[in-house]
Length: 126
Image 1 (cartoon, rainbow, N blue to C red):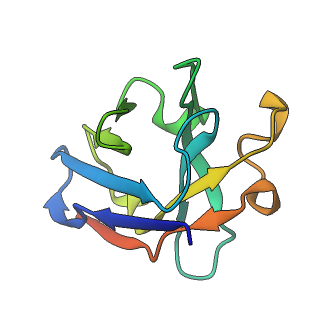
Image 2: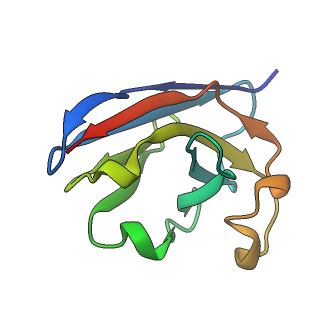
């Protein structure tokens, strides 16, 4: 069965950096959307960054453009989220997700994703 295993969360001060990793197993990694979502307490889960594993195209929500970078190692079936210039408002549980849909317009729609990781906490202090 498909598993997504995340790592790399932690606590940093504002302006710091973290790199999250998500390794996909149990099925073909190819031709999927691999994405990062986050959820802060009391808020809805929101899409942060997405990547199509075959095309290599990337997508970002406006609030992280220029600060976060999504990338992949398709030998290791792993997607990364490099987060620089972290702000207190980036504090959240971060989730990796995999989806088999094809519409780019859906990349940040939570209910389009088939598989989810367990989440990793990112805390940014001011």
